[in-house]
Image (cartoon, rainbow, N blue to C red):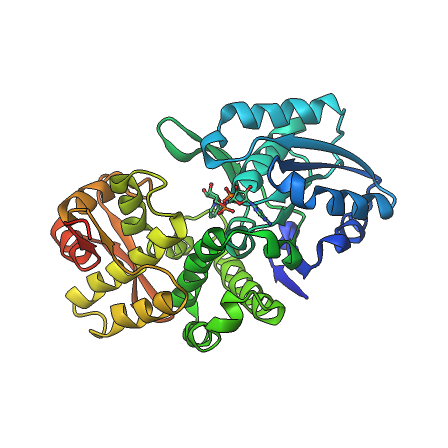
Length: 360
Ligand SMILES: NC(=O)c1ccc[n+]([C@@H]2O[C@H](COP(=O)([O-])OP(=O)(O)OC[C@H]3O[C@@H](n4cnc5c(N)ncnc54)[C@H](O)[C@@H]3O)[C@@H](O)[C@H]2O)c1
């Protein structure tokens, strides 16, 4: 199954398949070699299958393994990939294949963008979050002491190959985290998907193959449509930040790691729906409809031990702010997002609907 990202001369396919089908897809680029980059967690689980598939297709494969973790999504790890690519004497046609979650994909993509001013790049996402979000759209980069993803480049992959079989080894916590972004996609663009997630929650949480295929395909179609309209985020691509203004602020106030990113985004969606309700732009039931879907999937809809005022203050530090004004992409109904400036007091009132100052 394929979803096309129609970016003219940079157009590419997202292919849903099994990891042992990777080799044939890379071979179809018309190359004889590639460099496969993964991390030291995924290497234990899936490197051999990926490598064997590439070798079976007749490709020469060099392999690089980087350390795992968001904490190491930094200049040193990026540079180690750059040096590794140069050490195996890549030329400008050598594809660099990233096998892993969003952290690996962002780092490897930026290394591919940097070496020899740009090598062909292939994304093989192995987390749900990376399949439905991070691997599509060409954003690459790493974190600095100043914040997340502050250094990077747009570098579209030649194709994305989503091996659904690799999701069987993902922890429940990481899987749920991906579901937070799935709910986001549904809230942005697809009321039917939101209903389907609730109705089919048993199949979804059981990682039924047909359910996973439906989710990944639909989310990729939604993200692809947004990326095609606004590749470099000069406007409408900002709808993908829905839930992220309050979500990021919660992560910042609670300390990174206290809430997982997908959980924070889910709570952010509910909180930001309250902005629309407060403005009279949404029905009063919008936050609870989003909350019901999150709850059905085992995701939290509120968090304790945090003051709404602190969350509102933390939104001002969001990278997406322009000239100090907080612009928020908030849902006004399921399937429709508005991007508008939001006052601190409104953000505080919205944050209060999803936070409790006392610990439970
Ligand atoms: N480029 C973009 O457009 C974009 C969009 C969204 C998020 N991101 C980035 O993505 C990152 C988050 O991605 P993530 O949630 O995939 O995190 P991650 O890459 O850290 O993966 C989560 C954990 O799961 C492990 N893992 C990966 N695949 C596995 C598998 N199949 N089985 C078992 N374990 C596996 C990883 O090694 C890691 O320990 C963030 O850095 C974020 O900034 C980028």
